[in-house]
Image (cartoon, rainbow, N blue to C red; front, top):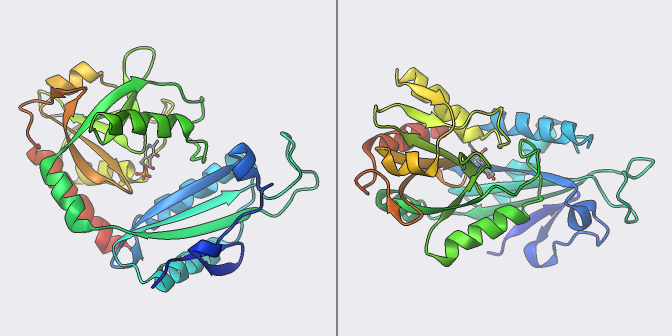
Length: 287
Ligand code: PLP
């Protein structure tokens, strides 16, 4: 069965799913997106992703294209039509279609909305987690509003390609003070020499990862200590463990940074425990 996309009110085969050439998302990256992991065809961390979508849109003065309830129905219908159980659902909302002009269209136009659904091989992703991944570092060169989840992802795409070119899976951005901000499509964490978890605070110029947030709650419920404090690539190499989080990666152990082993170079037990905990909780709370 072929894939089905939702485009501005219609469910259409992927090959026929098109947007207007003057969609401001296409021309100006004037658009935001969200990605929900799917467990058993249900949306993981629904509340966190909807809340961040509303915030991203609000920061850019783009209207919600429909109510949260209607949006949930569209996302679930797209998932159903694609018959995907394990995977992800992608939502993109642009300011809409208007003759090209940097300033916002006046009067306002209707936001444009696209939904696609992808399948993932969870066994392959578990195998990747069991092996751990390598990351590379790259200078932070993104704009100052990485808290807004916009489709302006060219620096992220270039960083990811830099990783791919050397057989790594993720790239960590490093700011001018030498601290890791986050990954190209994930948040970055370490377990330091004292066994304390550490991840960058959200006052920094990073995306407020929904997976990060859920995991922080789980960590605190487990009675583990966590510092929302920056770390350097050297701290990561000297750490016991490192890992990344995101709707795509879930919790994924990192075993090397710029070719240097993290700790003993093996997948860490805490990262794997947190991966199991996160997946259990995400499955239980999915809608
Ligand atoms: N940071 C960046 C730059 C991302 O693109 C993502 C996810 O795509 C994340 C962090 C993780 O966010 P979440 O856990 O909400 O998927």
